[in-house]
Amino acid sequence: MTNVNFYHLQADPLSRALPRLLEKVYEQQMTALVRGRTEDCLIELDECLWSANPSSFLPHAIAQDDVEVASQPILLTLTPDQNLNNADVLVLVEDAESPDIGSFDRCLYMFDGNDETALDAARARWKLLKDEDVPVSYFQQTETGWQKKA
Image 1 (tube, one colour):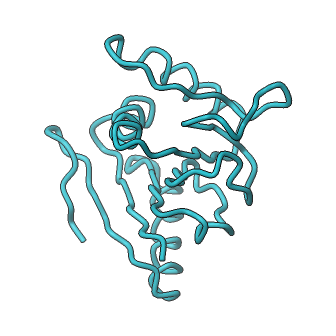
Image 2 (image 1 turned 90 degrees about the vertical axis):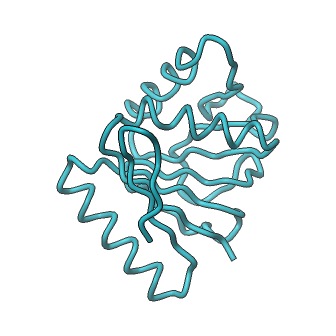
């Protein structure tokens, strides 16, 4: 069963926190599918993944017609129900849909703690998953890193 980790962003924005988490995924030789709701978000994440850490490289692409999606270690997509790159890890941003969550080993649900709408969506998703007996954990961002709270 897929484990879902909720990441409550407070100290850093998604554009700084996501690359660090994806570095850990990539270092473990796992693949990731980052799913959002808007093209603007994917473009912003694409840019931050190219420039986040000059001493490392996170191979990634946005799913488009001219991209061979199956070979991408990190794929950014708006597609709500396909594991396009056969990823181990699903990363949900912007409260993206996840009807295929069971086809991943792990899911990272990232939300902005300074946005009341995002908080409400995260609470609703948490409750839905708990009601379905999906294993969930909650990590809160601090100035020194992630702290597991539940």
